[in-house]
Amino acid sequence: MNGSNADTADGHQHATGGDGAAVGRTRSAPAARGGRAGGRVRMTGKQRREQLLEIGRSVFAERGYDGTSVEEIAERAGVSKPVVYEHFGGKEGLYAVVVDREMQLLLDMVTGALTGGHSRELLEQAAFALMDYIDTSTDGFKILVRDSPVAQSTGSFASLISDIATQVEDILGLEFKSRGFDPRLAPMYSQMLVGMVALTGQWWLEVRKPQKAEVAAHLVNLAWHGLEGLERHPKLVGERRV
Image 1: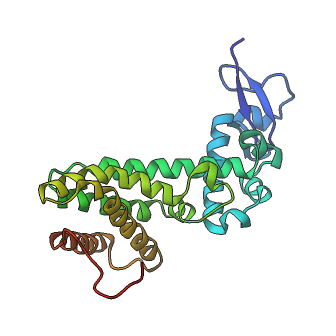
Image 2: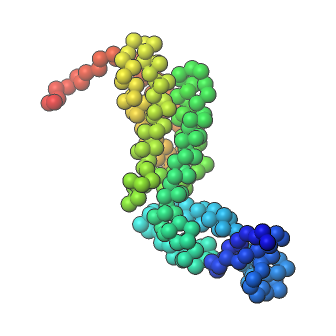
Image 3: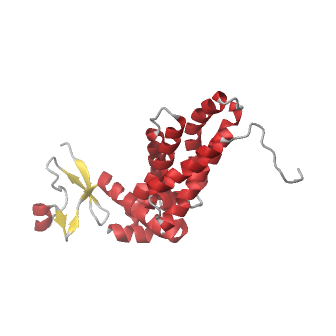
């Protein structure tokens, strides 16, 4: 018989037939009729995993990594602790998956937004995409900007910013070349530009004003007009010891 596994809220899995009805165990009448046992929804393993990811994402954003416990995640999901361990191996494993998902989402949003042909337009698109991510995925952004004990295995916000800067690097290199600047400096400048947008986004996350489109416009205003008057060989005007 071709069957699949259905995950219940108490953490047990039951073999199911093609119609999803549990077999091989004694079922209560309500569970047989409505797919519920004791008022709890029966889930597949995949559904349970997604539920735990969403709950974990919310709790990590609210309490941070250190303040989050497997017990609380399990309680909010209506399951026992072993269910969390079964799916992710523990808190660290769950956190790693949450961070990886958020990093990929942000990277996809920024790189996918770079469709314009003019350099300033591309800069506007990158800035607005990051602001848009902060606005629509606030919990994810809060998680990314925090350091954690598993940063080495999952990456960090700094490494993500570096990935995004790499996307901007080629665009900036062409701009430098057309203006007679050394294109080898483009990687450094792209880090500066993307870092400026990211830090501004952290500030805006708390104040939420002005509106994100206006913030993006001001960011581009500073970055673009700064580039417009860029010196080829900048030097410090004050005396500094090397």
